Image (cartoon, rainbow, N blue to C red; front, side, top):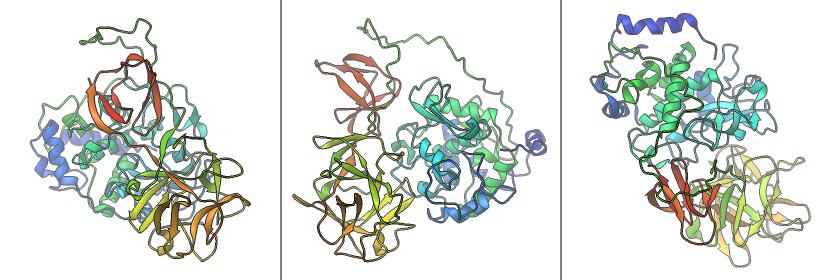
Length: 525
């Protein structure tokens, strides 16, 4: 992001000369938060900015013309600096960086089950290169020292996290947008403080603080190191034009210190705001660990120096056998178990067709599949939407709905779910598997063609398909240690069903939420 030095200097002067009511022509917009601090200030801001009148998900394409247009007229790409995308034109499929742009949920929509209004809140849903966005997947933001992937010229990175407090895979945005990302997360934890308690991942189960400590500390540092500039201010004004609310952390640079940081004992003054806080230093890359006040009474004499294991098996999917297991907002893969090439899961469109989708090889163990998804050579994960008798099948990888446009074998991508061609009935049969029947062309069912390997829609014959649903854990226990009292090795998964470690006996894990034998374990102490 290009910095407007004059504007930045002006912003720094404002706190010392006082504000005529609110900043950026906001008048009395923030008046009801006056005199609040800490958690009370956060809740007061929530009451001001909650319930944004968001556009539709499809409508974001036009919204970006207001919020994310570069001075040269092209789309502002948050994840790549080599693109020149035209609004509403350069969208669609991609095989490399620079092919097309799409809509990136900075807070992954899988964390909040694609619910509204978060799904299309333009504050956090930003335009990015589709390929880089796909590589980010739903990993949290963090800092990387040895990336496993970098976008062009090292602009963004993916790899193991080196930020103190977390060791999983993270996506690191470029330095010039880290502050923007941080202020988006402050906004999300505030605007949705009544909802984000169920999102897990980097959000806490309580309204305050709202973000787990390692993420909050990092975001506070990012915001201090990359302050608000004229581009971010202009976007905030455009956001209000699109959906009626604003990001207070952009209007008041340093406001986060009053909510979470060094000034939580100071009262917020919306007319005469003082942002004067000391910069947050970079953490010591090799800090001395704090002594553990509750040491393990029987520690492992040969502990694993790095107990976190990078995910290798991907998500866990279980075979669906009844309609009771169809849950709107949940994730599925479509599988043909009996093909001449072994089990195949629905993947990307065939290179010579936009009317049929190819298969990706997968391994089925009993009634379970462990696989990565939404990457080259991997299955496309499908989000179930709609309602019983009129379900929609949303392909997040290609940002489109599976559907039919005519009474032929073609399985198409549709831009929205407004027609019956994008709606399906789903039932289950002992021999026919998952019967996924199109509502516009009711004689056609989604099947697999063994002779011309592909997933398409047929009136008769061909191989049946099955649905496999991403696993969902239940129950919660709060603990510091994972202890296995059996002789077996337990597999430990994160909330997305990815294996992160194994355990025999006692194993200390970083703070977070883990799944073992179908139960959630919250490591919070």
